[in-house]
Length: 116
Image (cartoon, rainbow, N blue to C red; front, side, top):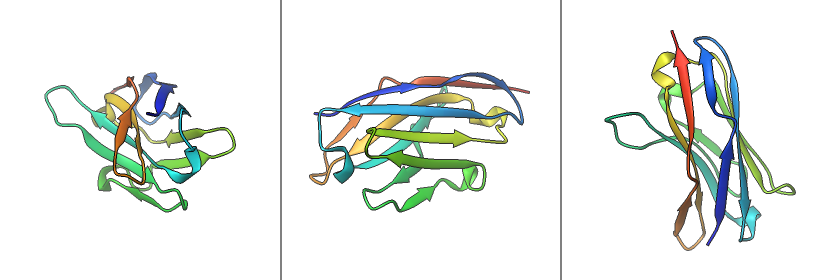
């Protein structure tokens, strides 16, 4: 099992920026794909961004050009830099790990609120 702890959420005005961090423990970090998901009230959880063990990235269309996912294998960290935030980005953001076996683990989530 992999333990994930998110941090960096908060309240920001539209157009502002936040950087989310996720600390991972309990597994060989570098071999895992990492991702950020979000869930807004009344909506399903959706993929925001993913970074593979090889460093390839993919993003939801709604955040392309605004969000950047990155990882530091030495520190066992994954980050989500969020710029030009919009009220519709308001959600609980979850860190996700997908192991080569296909098993997944989740963090507890961090709230991001963007005011208009």
